[in-house]
Length: 389
Image (cartoon, rainbow, N blue to C red):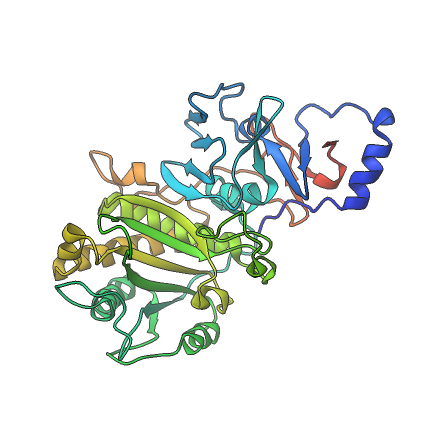
């Protein structure tokens, strides 16, 4: 897992007291901007690091960075951004200071970096087993439409997904095989007992207020110290202090692999890659995601979900995404993105080519210095980067 090193308050105070003696930042160094208790980096600094266009000016509070290396789009005052054509939700909103857009250090390390350079995710284990978790069951019907219940649809998707994964060489374990209830902690216990595994929980959505809400979304665990996607940032939230997971970057990339495939193959509205502290995500110790495959409270989508063939298409897209993640873990192959699936001649997982040599992965305490080639420099410890008060 890639983390950007924590800058202690004592170091920040020491840096400030010695401000007159500090030398200008070396060309290409990270420049950490302190705002309150959080560390930020400028969008220009991030663009330089990934080799994206520099000095791009905002248009209607948005900065769009795009070339052959990737796509990033930031919106001032918002937690929503685009990464390689897919909606993502940051932990903290983009800020502005002295005319510069600022992105939190945590969001760079935990959300942007794993998706921009997945081949550099550290300690990513091989995947032999997929634990499929059909949501709800038994007396817990989940969301309900006029066509049926969530518990039945999730079980059917899981049953169609299992042989698809087995055909790709995976072992498959389901947390429930029939219409009965399994407590959430038991589902997590089943997953944690399996080595070399990932956990995929399948659900369908419902909206209490907006009956027109529709589309796909996918969740991984919220990092420690951050609010979940649907938390109110203005409200003190004790959950923010809950422990995160040692496989956070693995889970966000698993989310990305599956979500790009879902959007590329099925094409429902993109509600985004999100963060939550759902019990099955909080209690599992392996790469884990929770998929919301559309809304049972929206007329058109509920009709699609009720169609067994459509659910089979959903299962097929999930299986391709999981196989992409396995190829990354096993062989460092670059996962396919939504743009790859939507070309006139769609690519398959067999079409992937090995990613180029991108250098030595960063240690958990450091991140490489930015340059036009983000892998050509040795790591730089952020505790030595200048602090801009």
